[in-house]
Length: 277
Image: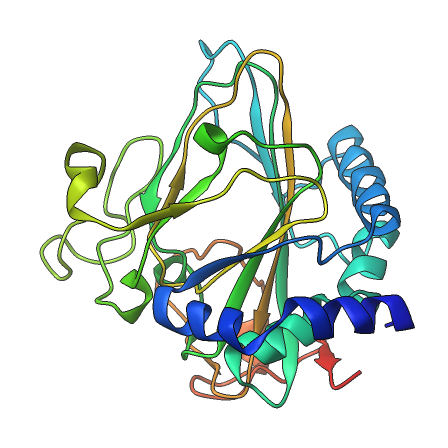
């Protein structure tokens, strides 16, 4: 991390902002990344879009006038992703927000909605889809295009304190991870928005939205004149442990269960130590 990134980390990650994260489960850190780092991420996303990995998924329906694609776990093959993950202020910000002494990479996730994409991302928590347990975690959602307020990521403040709610498949709403009835279903947040404190921010490139993996979140489609290219990176801290699942996680980590026992710290080459650098 260079001196300019250290300065941004010191100035942006104030005690008040860390307190907001701990209370609400989500904050927006304005201009944590430099214009050069944003440009690098654009290059990385465009290279990813030009050659998606076998892990890529189309998340929009055939009749959607736009197009929504996701891809996962490309940092080892995408130099732009790797440089931003390893060399920017992001790992230091993760350490301050979580209070963890050490920060490891969990995984990267590219999400691009082309202009006119109607497909929403429904309300959900991320952690039930993952193969980890623990509280010291943070996801960072980084848009390299300006995002209007109505197309941004939204959060239910305080929902990161739980409980876990039933994860369902986004396309057909099936409970494929936990048996029906074993977890409470999500409330109808959109029908009762006035009953929740909902957070969301208009975004400019360089801003970083940081949220806990249990925070309830969602986003809408995008307008016909605006694409939304996003790089999301997930970090894990001291108390995170491996939790092998009976179901397919998102993303998958083939072979990990043979190398890393249940309950073990995430000490594996797939999850490099980033902080302290």
